[in-house]
Image 1 (cartoon, rainbow, N blue to C red):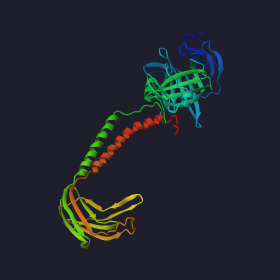
Image 2: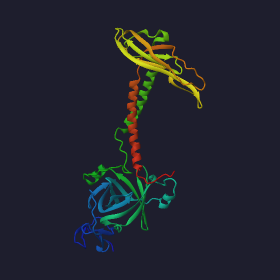
Image 3: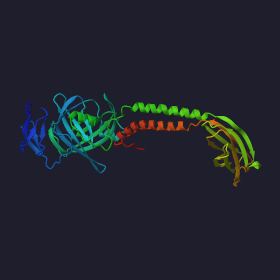
Length: 433
């Protein structure tokens, strides 16, 4: 016996409540939301069994709501809550059975604030538990919709049923589903008892669901859903590519400025240790560029502390600074080694044009007391060489801008990468070492 296709409503044969008939002639059972009685839709709504003490799950959708998804108008005709206990936690989600007179049945699933749309998939391919358990790498299935890689295995049970269904759902009935995912969709290979079905699911944006059902949805998600698409934004590619281009430009500019040597003011000016302290006059221009004073000493397995002072053309102090030059070398079981440097420098920007006076002194110096294996002599400081260059451009600002644009590029690039990682973070596949 089949249900009259013109039937629009019935009364529950258990509690008398009025029930809408929405799901077409293929509906097998209808479960009363008021008393939990399962009625045989093919046999005058005869009472089959009763589900007691079922707590209705929270969902913004109700039976009878209509909405247009992917160009098809669907009506919600049933609700099923599923649950899975894994890792000491209980996970629940609600499947809303959808019906279209022209396109048949589908599912709208609410899971942790996310929505997915699911239909039966009739294409080839199947992923079994045995395949997953014996595979050394995540199994994959190729379909006309792309390549699907293993994601997880779940065993869920029904905890709530309400409405019309094209099969007989049972509270407590368990279903094992092996999921495989591509970039845009997921295949679910489900086994319930002796029955097997394959489903294909895609993500539904909150805004799409609100437009489809004409209602505001208060959906709050606390994690990225495996099927959730990456929302790049209207200027994502422009910002990412522009940031990369400007990073390269700024680095080239910084390298160009860094390689410019400026003008020689003082070349290889030698100072004997016996002459210290010494005053050196050097003409500088206030050209808003840098001047670098470079010093080198003939220390070897020794050190010398340099006391430096600079006076401007008016005799006013520009800076006082201290630098240490030290250089050590030797040989051990690992071979020759060296550390330290015989060079030091001070960089500043002249504010006035004229003759500047550099005062150099070495108030302290010393030898390295360790005797090396190859008897390298410890030589104290004897001579100091001074070089001065002016008109040096600074590439610091270009390096700083390159860093800013580089961080912007990495941020844009990382957004997509981190989203992809978050999508796959819930997989239960573990690579064995």
